[in-house]
Image (cartoon, rainbow, N blue to C red; front, side):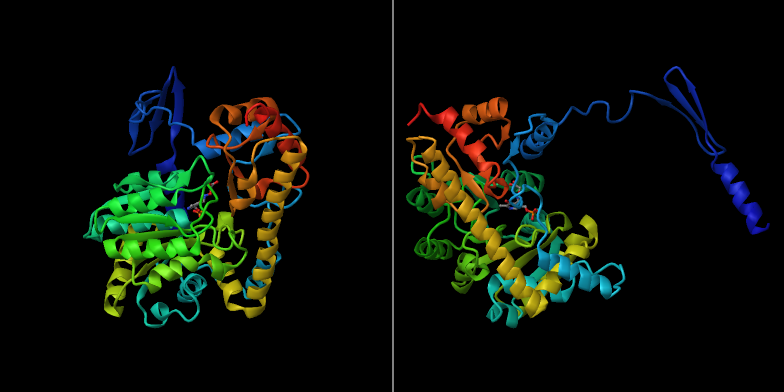
Length: 443
Ligand code: IK2
């Protein structure tokens, strides 16, 4: 049979005649003849899922017709005109990559070696003995969320200690969801003091000392989400001692490296200290926030081990966990991050550009506080400037948050968390005025 004839026969063979009668679709072909009933499917019993708190707010914001509306719900950085911001160094890196005419082949399941090396260095330091002596297993992930999932799955399969995760109260909501989906049980340790708007250090230490030996503890390495409250250096040091004595497995989420102080080294103090102290650490990282590569999803999971041979085995199991999950990670964002990190000119540019972002966040915090005072508010708003990073835990109650939304079209999560990265000199007056209106009778 000629190739033309084969194609025609094949097309005939696949031709489906769709006949609609009542609510039945009849599909006929030489090999398929079945009736499909509308409304009776395997999924008919699926209930509508609950709306996601963060994305639900963004959708409500988009649907809102008030021209003054403000969305402070999601942790992304926007410029002073309220527009998503692409760092100039990212644009440059993209241009350079484009000129290299790279192919689009798959990378290996753990991601490119150079990316993984550079990503580890930004957290552990360029001279880290753990990197130099190959004591780390490191894999590229689908950002930090993917890294959390991989970490929890790895723990579920291989951890021989007490498989219970302790998280700060409160924590990023999705930590709990990811743990749940990975089948890892969890509990809280005290973290935030709702009276002082600061750290409940005493409560934290008491609760951590009660965690079963070899349990698992999650820390936000800096710029805690949602509270913006971090331990001091000396507190981290004491925590590291306690954790080591209890032989806890530590999972560091370094979501906002750079956002607390404007300096990447300063913000990795806690992680480096815990690692140097000999703690068993796993670290999840990404460049989504600090390079503004949100949708590109370059992330990573680092597992610190005590021996090169152990690191090699852990690395092999990470690969085996990745393959059935998504095979290989996306390459585009990782290439950008790698380019910036490995080109000294671009790296310096990134640090300078990022410092401007961190400084702008600090300055908009000050502006918000001073506008509230100017409005005549007699409440203490010092925590707005004392907390750091992308978020401020305002202390607004659920009902006040609701009022802000319904009466002023200002959207924020019901915990009272605002994303400072979405405040700007154009909307801060409106926000301060509205907050004052709904809080003015409460000290
Ligand atoms: N871990 C923490 C602590 C995070 O805050 C995030 C990002 N959250 O951003 C949404 C919000 O809270 O408004 C992640 C992990 C996940 O980050 P990634 O985007 O890198 O997966």
